[in-house]
Amino acid sequence: MKNRKWVLGFAALVVIAGLLYGAYVILMPEGKTGAKQITFTVTQADGQTQTFAISTDQAYLRKALEAQGLIAGEESDYGMYVKTVDGTTADESNQEWWCFTQNGETLMTGVDTTPIADGDCFEAALTTGY
Image 1 (cartoon, rainbow, N blue to C red):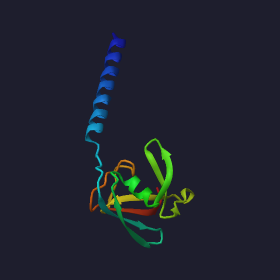
Image 2: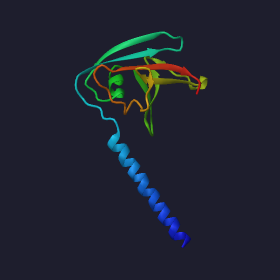
Image 3: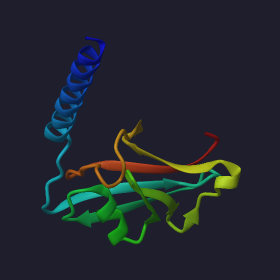
């Protein structure tokens, strides 16, 4: 009897996990190709900023920034882990990392899955401390 309850509980957990994954796939933001203009502002550790006006037909942020040579990094299980922005590489030994935002709000998606639309404004700031 105890084994049956355990098996039923595990089966219910698998079904719930499948439903949550399905909801994620359905509700995941989609990028659309087509001509668009975006801005990308880079803030260095010393506070200096530089803004880039980008014309692109890409659907997602990574491809738009890579086409301009503005980002580089390593592949991870979650997509690109951005280590270099506008030629500056974050020094992980100093707990440096690049914080990506859109209109000042921290992105909840990686650069691979962040859709872009005409007029969007993105920022990357070299940040110290985890």
